[in-house]
Image 1 (cartoon, rainbow over the protein chains, first blue to last red):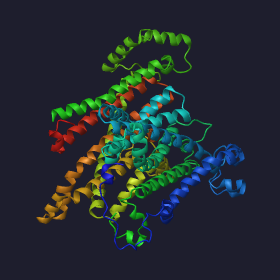
Image 2 (cartoon, each protein chain N blue to C red):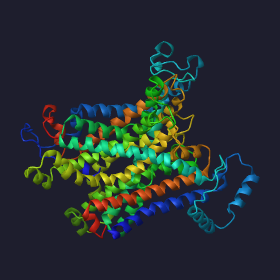
Image 3 (cartoon, helix red, strand yellow):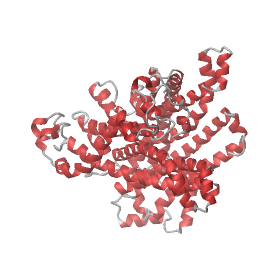
Image 4 (cartoon, rainbow over the protein chains, first blue to last red):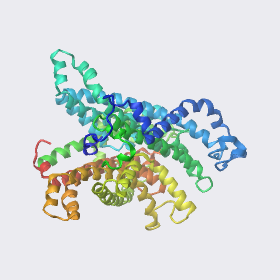
Length: 320
Length: 309
C-alpha cells in the first residue's frame, strides 16, 4: 500500500456509538458477517476455491466430452445437456460451464503457489534487510528496483521463450516479478520497528536477531503482508490469464480462463459466450479479491476498524 | 540538481544493463543458442553454418564483447521470418506504439486530474464514487476481456467500429485507447485523489482560503500543484505497466506496434527480433525514467537541492 493511500487519517471512533459492555474489539468473524459486501466477496472466493478443489474430480470428464452434434449451443440450452448447458457449448460440443469450473483449478494452481512463494521470499528478505539496515538494505532495495522497473510481461516473454511454458514456469516468472512488492512493504515496516523499545529490550537480553525478527517483528508486520497478498492474488490471476490469452501461458489441452477467452475470440461472430463467460469468471474472482483486500485492510488496522462496526446509516455521514 | 540527476540516471541504468546481460545469458547459457535463433525444424547443417557465421564457436567473453558491440551498432541480426534486419522491423513498429501510448497517457492524466480532484473536493459525490469505481476496475478487470467484449459489442453487434488495424482514421483508435486507458486511469485517479485529500487539508490551502481566494483557484493553483508530485512518481510505474497493456491491446486489435511484433516473434520463434524489441523497450523505459526525474526535480525544490538522494 502506498503512503498516499494511507494518508487520510481518520478521526477517532464516533463517541455517540453505544458503549459495548465488553471492551475487547469485536472478533474478526463477527465483523465480516456484519459487512454484506465483504461476505459476498469472501463467499465468491470460497466457491471458486471449492470449484478448483472438486471441479476436476466431478466435472473433469464432462469438460472433455466432445459431441459435434451439440456444437456451439447458445447459453441456457438445458434440453440437450441439463444444467451443464447453462453457459452453452464450444465448437467441439463441450460444456462451457464445466470447462470454466475445471479451469478454476488452473487459476488456483498458479495463483496460490505464486502468492505464497513471493510473500515468503520477499518478506524474509525485506524483514532481514530492514532489521539490519546498512549495506544489506541497499543491496536488497536495488534488487527490488531492478525487477520493478522492468515490465513483468517482458520478463515472462523472454523466459517463456526459452523454457517450455507450463504451470511451474509461470509460477517461477510471476514469483520473481511479485517478490519486490512484499520486499518493499516488509522492509519499510521492519526498519521502523527495529528502532522501537521492545526490540531494544530483546536485544539487551541477547536474543539473536533471527529470533527477534521472528517473534517480535513478524507478528506486527503480518497483517499488512496478508492485505498485500490478497490484493496480489488478484494481480497474479490477471497476469496468468493475460499470459495464457497471449498464447505463452497455459497450453492446451489444459484449460485456463485466459486461454478460453483467446480460443473464443475466433468465434466472436457466431458464439459470443465462448469468450464472454470465462472472462466474467476472471472479473468476479478478481473483484472479490479486491473487495476482500480492502476489507482486510480496514479490519486489521486498529485505527480504522471502527468503520466496520458503524451502522450503515451512520457510515454515510462519516467522510470516507 | 546535477548530482541528483546523475545519481538517479545511474540507478535507472542498472536495470538496463541487467536486461542487456540477461538477454545475452539466456541466449548463450541455456544450452545451444542455435535452438533459440533457428526454428525447431532447422537441419544440423543449417545449425552448424549458423554457429560458424555468428561466432558461436568463440569463447563466451568474446561473444559478450561482440554482442555489446553489435547492440551499440543496432545490429541484432536478421529476422528469420522476413529476412529483414531486426532493428529495421523494430524501428518501423516503434512509432505506432509510441503514438498509442502517448495519446492514452494524455487522456488518462486529464481524466484522472479532473475526476480525482473533484472526488477529493467533494467526498461522497458522484465523482467520488466514480473514482472508487475507476480504481476498482483498473485493478481487477482483465484488459483483454474488455477488448474482446468491446470488439463483440461495437464491431460485431453494432458494427460501428472496426475490429482491428489502425488504417480507419479516428475510429480505429477508440477501442485500443479505451482498453489501454483502463489501468493507468484507475491508478492515477486514486493517486490524485489521495494527494488532493491531503493537499486540501494542508495549512497553505487553509491560508489561501482564509485570505479569500475563490475555491476554484485554491484547487487549481494551490492544491493541484502540490498534488502533482506524487502523481509523477507513479508515472514511471505506469509506463512499465503500459508496456504490458500495449502487448495485449496491439495483439487483439492488430495494431502494427512493438507489442504485437514481440508476441509474433515469440510464437514464430524469431529470437533476433524479440531481442531487439525487448532492448528497445528497456531503453525507452530508462529514458522515460530520466525525464520523469528531471520533471520531478523541476517541480519540487526540496528534491532538487538535496544531494543525499
